[in-house]
Length: 408
Image (cartoon, one colour):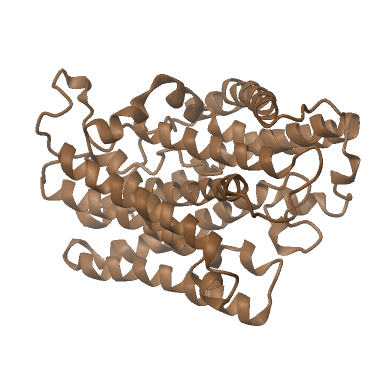
């Protein structure tokens, strides 16, 4: 696709890091509830259990965020219509970002389960290669086993493989056919709808719901947000004001809430299976777009230092929290009160996440020049008040390295 280089930036998007933190914490709290010392809840009748279960929507947020961040460079290249994204560098940097911490976690889990248990979580020797190549979702013997959260990373890895093809199609469409690019991304949402319906009708479990077609629509909704922002930047449009930002956040939060409510009330028929997490994904896409491009108090709170700090290490937190939870529970060290359980698991996960970031992830990010990209909008660090009028900043070169490990 030409020679447009992927350049990182030393600036970070604090609001998006804040969203990463919230997504990671929501998944962690969901697992603390799910893997209680007395065993998994068998049914959800109490409001508390319903709320805890719906925290798994943090996974959907990660998928949408990945689509948004990774597609920015491809959208920018298509709208510029000059040079494409350097796919080779994209591949090298994606590998450098996701693989080392993942493999360290795989090795660490093997050691942790062997020494502390539960040893029943250890995969057989013949199954370990599946985890090594992100193919665990393609076998009923390995999907949702060992370190169960890695099923999402297998889907992320599949996205990394096909995203350049989607970007190439967008690049070929060029800046004069943005509508066709929008239609292409909406068609990907249709792929997920059709796939989910087929999985339900054909009873393709457990593999069918855990492969890329089931989630390509969620990524695509994030991509649409990225395209909208890049389109506005290309024509020099002003950034959304505080009121417009608040409306986007409110609408997005509403869709997420309605998606969760629908999960708990719609039953388990084909309509439920077909739409699944897409309503919530639409909500997250609106919130992410607002956080990346907007301003004002509706998104300003996402810049809180504790949230940003957790967002930075969220990949390691996500990778390690469930193995540490399972080992601690197996050793009989997990307290029964929910708040104490959450405190223990969160503390262990933050320590592991910080170690993963400092010792594994950051050195390789610096080595390959993949520092996370800065805010999509010019941040208020230029001395102006946050409510001052701004324009979408123009970037001459594409960057697909806005770190997006959703489950990353």
